[in-house]
Image (cartoon, rainbow, N blue to C red; front, side):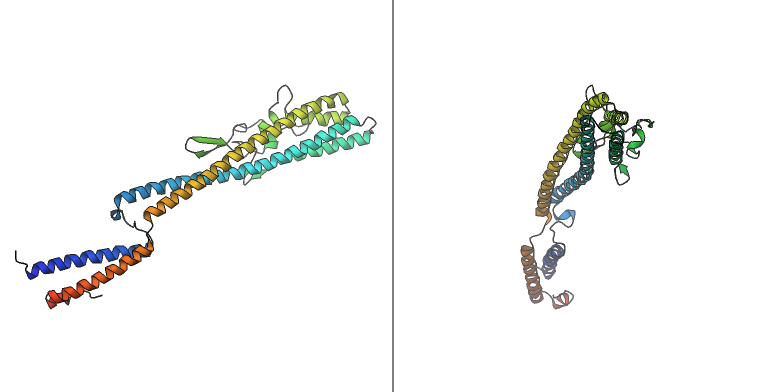
Length: 307
């Protein structure tokens, strides 16, 4: 078959176009650092890359939730430790009152006043907030817990609001939800075994100290020990949840790193290879133009770029 000048021109243009497209793709990889810049580059790899991007985004969402939950629980644990410390001081004062058989009326009243201040401090700690939310409020996090707790024997607290006994759960993985809260109801309104709840125990202590009721104080001390053990157990349970969140956070961070590395391996360009390819394409392009100038009509070559 006879090769005509027209056929040579068409073949030349076809080759030049392919080389030019290759140079453009390589140049785009140089500028973006990625091999996947549009879906047509590698449809299968692009699909896999998008799936990985979705997983990275989902993992990032869980990590953000866990971080928020850890902040909330750590603040709760700090407040609980404050309550425990103050309850232990109340416990010590009750023991002192029971062992001071010859205490004057003034000394007895002073001890009662000291315990009253400690109890007010306990309720003040129960009102601690994170942002605009009360950390012991449960799902009723906008309601101040001390408003529905009886802070002294003469108090008439408000009814416990809906949601005050309900915990807030955070989803830390697909299908896995964990409570981040300890509620004021758990601490003050839940009775341990046959003992009165902490709210009633504290009020009984105030009344019995003021009245010098030694028999009542003996029972109050027993009740306070049970209440204190309950609060310590609440803090221990919270500590276990903090540990669970921390473990999940570490695992998700490692998983996110692995996903990101895998994603980078799919879409990331080998810059040394890309630079070599671009240099090769430039050389081939220049050589093709020079060869074309020799075998084609000058009138055609005059209209082609020569760089």
